[in-house]
Length: 638
Image 1 (cartoon, rainbow, N blue to C red):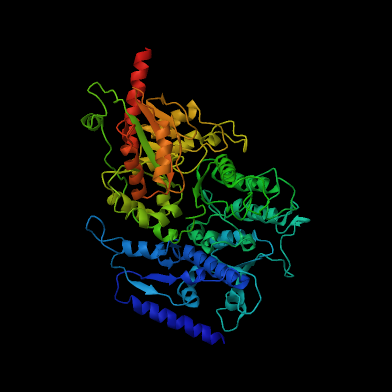
Image 2: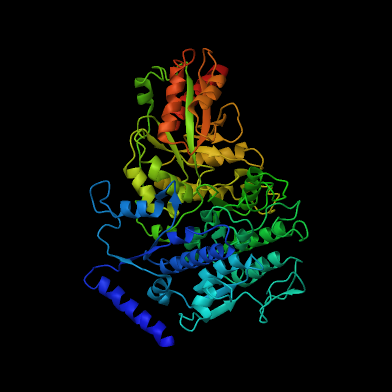
């Protein structure tokens, strides 16, 4: 029987070699994983097969693409559009400047089965790490071990037809060796919440879930088997208990973090209630373990690196008061608490939240070349005078100046899923749009960010999203840090941001989310003045001010999440007065298309009473005008 598997491996190797015998480069291997979405949510066995194969392929992709882009998958669908195919076809087309596209001309090989795919990349993995669904946290351990030890994560399931049986025990299958098992030798759970934590000598926390992460910290983070500047914060196998839209498990996002040897975690940020997935644990255990996890990463890098955290709490399945979960905190408060904790350990969030959270192929995209700098044209004082927005003396006109923060793009996944439609919108370029693309997202989607800059119109403006080069609570970086008690990291954050702002030619930060942390202080504003000198927008509404020559203002309010131009225009018009002095307002929209933004602008300008007073501008013009108004105000005081 083993001869059958060996023969298949030999034939696969021959066919693969033949596919690029006369090519200059190794082919890109394509694998269509979209079948893993076409399952019955009501069938637990189908859901598990979908999870198992998606998890396995994502891990294999991370290993295969660790040093060069070799494996590309098709999986993510949004609004009927196959997102991965869209970007693959785009990057194989000629570049916007007429030169060759990044992937243009590179040969392609289509793998037709999972077994064939495993054979093609057999040199990239040493065997399997088997995890235990009875302790769902072991799926995050398996993702960590997969990246650290070059193994494939497989859920233990001896039933006929399971992936475990098919790949590990079936004599007609590849019989992948189990290098690491996260089960006890007798087949029971390795982590029980009792006695000592296996292989560590540490006392149990009383929670099997927390014990699993203490094992990971002791055996992998502290020993240096993982990287020290990245982590995945994605749902564990408890997802089976609340299976919703298939893509929401975000397993395809794992590849980038597995390629980087990052540890994975899924723990509650709340220390005032037991988590919904582990209701019998001592209250506060999850949060204490989370602090231990990120504290270990901090110790590893000696507080000298910002930590890239991909993911988001799956708030419709865990840790919140959503529907029947039983928690007492709402989803937004839970997001804010998560970010508050991360910020206290020098970690920033790449927020792959629900709705647009799934992304594939980031380990592939990470190898795309980028320019050292992407400059773009920003308005000057002369431009504003020519438009009549500044007078000859540099004073702003008596207008209500309005600028719209086009968000929320603090997640590479959200950019990846929305831009095929948004960037192709026929009205893009007809009105000024402040694209709040967090610059760090280029780490996972480099070719997309290159494309956006090379195809931008004069009305496409780029500002940093929340809260700079990564989503943090700024005051979580400033002493005293009540969550961690660590030294302040404002200088580290400043240097981190300077690098990204310099490359992407950013000088405005469109939104600083305070969340549940304290409001930004003058000390923090001075830090922002170093890398965002043209202006910042604070979370809480505040009258404008100046710090070190940098103008700042508070966000006026969010506009409706369901894009409604009439409703949004009514909100803005209610804020605008007919005073004889300039007014300044910043509003936030979340995933509004250019067509929807244009409809809002047109409604505002068409208002018979206030339309002539309203001037909608880009953020760079807005802050130049605000700075002029603040300077005039200061002169009058003097």
